[in-house]
Image 1 (cartoon, rainbow, N blue to C red):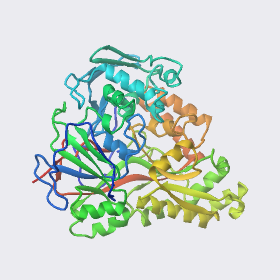
Image 2: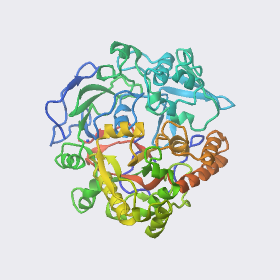
Image 3: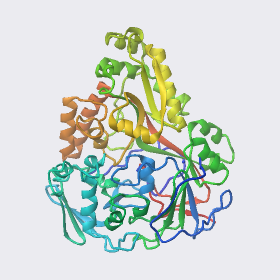
Length: 557
């Protein structure tokens, strides 16, 4: 893509490919806790709610925060909305650009050894933390080690940093340091990984690879909170009012040039419709659109020109947890569920036909996406037959089941309710929809407590490894549903270290076919975002995984 693109989901175009590698890319209550940020003060707001947003110089960008941040610690974060906020403040060695490729960030360049195992990063001398101190290679030694430290107890560090030599031993508490992280001088960082892996560099874009300010964290007792939220990014925290808003001020000394806006006002607005109403009232410059309002917006002469559509590398799926729900250990039960869901009807009636129907696991746009792969078709008769063969004719004696889904997201709720109704109608089983608050949902999912849930997995980086090996290989931290197939594991393991790109993708294709046939997931659809934009909004940089930090965003007069 050349910059952000207005309107029109890009159907039928070839996905961008990355050589070698293969973001995620909001009611306001009174009495909120107010926490000042670590900056040097908070200038008055420039934009006026309900009125003009100001001039290009000194304007305030008003965007919704769709969830209360689950954590402020990059070593702990797992959800997209929180990451989208944190990436305004923090940065890592590399970053994504509008062409869907990896680009320099705090590392201005890097070298890779011939065997593909050693990465030597050359850091920017102009990069500084928000407190004015220059970034050095020791900051990355500290930050990466902190993510992996047993005391940090990161749920994701061994997903994104596990390839570094010595990471596992340090994470387990059996080594005093990570052997594969070295800082030979102040502006050189050397990372050594266990085997050559085409996706390793892309993993460093995840927050576990962000540069963290050591002295700030030490001043807050080792905890990364509002007072120690000091990064190197284009924006710095000015204020955080829990349940109300986050204020981010432009970093005037940012190494890549000061942002064009003076401030981001990120209202914490949890409800879809409330975000939409605030946009219409002129209180937000950007808002997501649920399918409940999409049809009406398209028929509204004022709102229709403001609609923008973006296809994302993300899959919404049903997770069938074999550990928490013994009937799902039977492949015929899982396959019956797959045959019993009418995806086409859900997309027509709930989603206005906007997203693509998902047949496989790897989404459109990700290298390795297989358009020829077909999942289980909608076939109620076959579904009933399989359930009967599994010992539950017409649903008899099938244990009660809940379908858990994220709260306060209309499209997700309506999809989950429709799926529950179809399973009851086509299989004769009782499925109760269970709306779950987001932070609790994440905890339960991490603990493996939910037998059956509807969830999204968004690409952290554009590579099939991030969907197949990361999510479904047995024994990996993100495989919370007990799926295990040795043939699938062998194919993923071989693909992960294969250096020939064509052979690598062929191996992932074979693994994906097995994963779809085993039905540990039931793929439903690939994500497409619909947003409303203030017509004054300009320069938003977008790539396949979402909007990039608002370095170049501006508001026209």
